[in-house]
Length: 449
Image 1: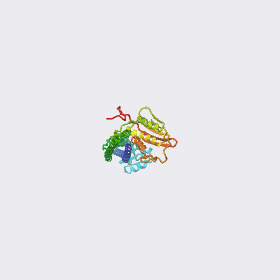
Image 2 (image 1 turned 90 degrees about the vertical axis):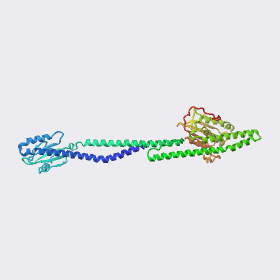
Image 3 (image 1 turned 60 degrees about the vertical axis):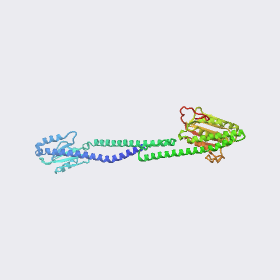
Image 4 (image 1 turned 180 degrees about the horizontal axis):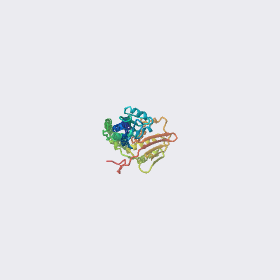
């Protein structure tokens, strides 16, 4: 935008200056020629007036020669005095121009005039009345260089003025462009912060009216999104809170069971359900940008160990491979746990018992963290559609949707490949997140206060 504004200003200024300076250059050329011609005419008239009385007798020609010689100099036009008998005092123009005789003959009739010969330059002829043998003619010859002396200097001055005006125009356009571009970039940075989840970001209305209007509407949009998310979180928290009553009733029913073993087992399940409800409430009321980072490798190892007993009961060989070091990703640990559980649960539920699977955590060439869950099963059916609520594979389709949303919400990608020969391979890619400042990371079952 800034470069385009500069180019537009340069082009417009150049066109305007061309329209103005071209006539000015022609005018300066004409003015220089007219000024030089006027000076030459005045010189010729002065010479004619000065030597007129001296030409009454032929003996006074020496005085005329001195007068003509006094007005001839190396940097002045050539001044000649042509007598009626053909005698010339000063430079003889007839040796340079063959047609000069006709002009002199016309001047002897008593007419003073100026004309431009075909060879260039200009001639000024003034008759001198009172010569002893007829009318003499004072002739001043102007060359092209003398005629347009000073024109180049004027042109250079005009060119300098034009260049200066162009530079001033570009400077003003650059300052205006910097203001517009700066306001636009700051507005874009605010939009990027909002897109990244920072709902506290607000744009400062600045720049032209259009940008100020956009900034105001963007701030209104951010406020509205914040209000909607707050209402949604509160609704989810209220809904989860309502579940506490039936959960409490289930706990009471479990305590009344006669079989103590069944009562203990159901009470444990009810306690787990209560913890899940409390976790939903905490997540719903957690600020949007307060989601902590999690170590993908550590969570993958933990969940693999959690599912290992069930995998062994089904006769499955499992393998967990993680690169050394941490793989921090911008995903809450419980969300990452849910995604990995969903992928492992799909393998355990939808592949034949005894089918091996492996979990791999690695860093791709782009520097992003990857989680790969692959099995050696028969693959997914051709009608399988990994969509929320309908998978075509005899399930709800929620598991893969949870994994997909977990990756995409963090700015990553979801990819799935399946065939009958190589089984199913699900890859979640997450952008690497910088490690958090040193702090004590609570365990999954440790109280956080």
